[in-house]
Amino acid sequence: MVVVSHSPDGSAERIMARGNFSLDAGGLISLLLALTAVTLGLAGLLAWQGFWPVLLIAVIQLTLVVWILVRAWERAWVSELLTIGPEWIEVTRQRHKRRDHCRLEAAWAVVELERPEVAWYGPRVILRSRGKKIELGRFLTIDEKKQLADCVRIAVQKHSAIKGAFNV
Image 1 (tube, rainbow, N blue to C red):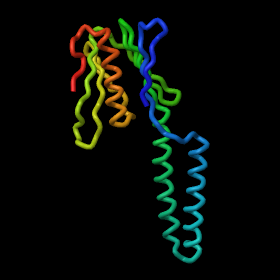
Image 2: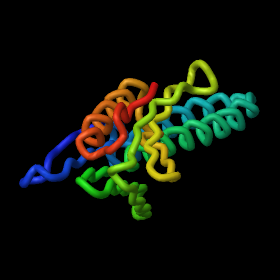
Image 3: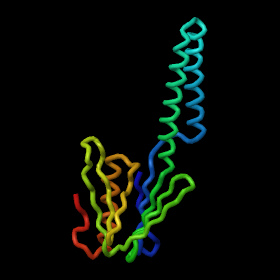
Image 4: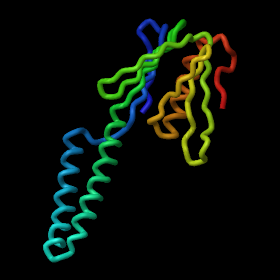
């Protein structure tokens, strides 16, 4: 999800990029408990009848499914906030309680949408300025990455000294 807002005086733009995942923590726990109850109930019934390897396979499957769902849920809490002003572009990445901050000069900023090395991967949104390079929106879908690239390009062009500050 990409959301654009402007400062009250119009001097800076804020672009927020967040992952999408519809479950909150309570919903995820409820889903995992229901999945565990059904899977272990059926596997336990079969193990009781002598098919004990089914129980081992069910535990391995549950472990894998829980790991995948928790990883997907964690990605929902990743966000990037870009504040684009006349002099500086500030990028703040947050994942849970960890926060990373990067500052780039707006006058030399260039936005690039790089083609992926592998055909089925999505493009990479790269923001460059004076030798610094950061990738934006790794956690976004392909369409959201294109939307992010367009929003950042429009905001950066207002302050960039480089003409055509967008490359595909």
